[in-house]
Length: 240
Image (cartoon, rainbow, N blue to C red; front, top):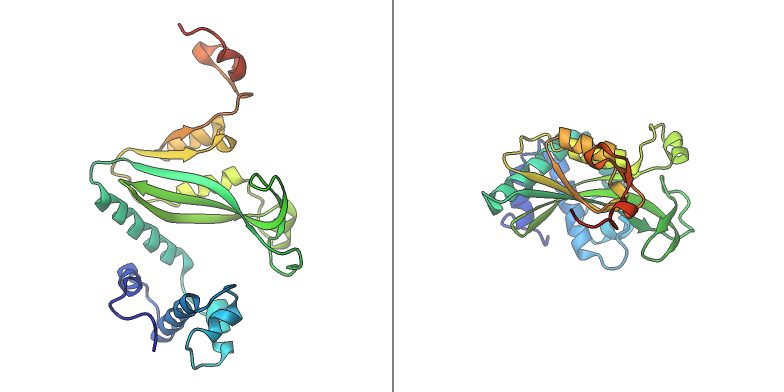
């Protein structure tokens, strides 16, 4: 017997997305989610399949994940649209806040065959870690916080191996904001740390209809009243 039922929040959410999936695709997805819930320890495909209560051969499970035809762009659009609707209902007069940050998903150094892995510097452990670097976007409104999008940062070498054009983390952050192509009906702010703060990022973000709230590095150059100044020196001046 499956853990998921037709009355579960997962089913309600899935059908709200109105995905044009076939019945076999739906069964595979529901079995996959069952396996994630049932399995303990590492969420490997083998462990998920063993705990999915799926009576079919594992090869069909793998084919669903690797080859089953479904439109990723349409699914992500529906998912983000649903999330923004939820944010709207959480507070009709409150502004939207969109936070951008990057994090590491660390792996054992013995993991050599996973695409995109490289040594990235961790500000938590203060050392380089064998990992994926993920740039993520979250939406916030009136106490509700929902994940909206994420992009995997690839080094120039990894990108070339996968035949992808190189993009910086700032480029990826802007891509996630451009993906919110639903008309924003209220004031919307982007929250970042000082690493993302640059003239190019702020200008592009404002072109997309957002205002930026961010930290700023002390070595940044800016132009108060048209005069070139270094922030660390300008901050020492007496208030006028």
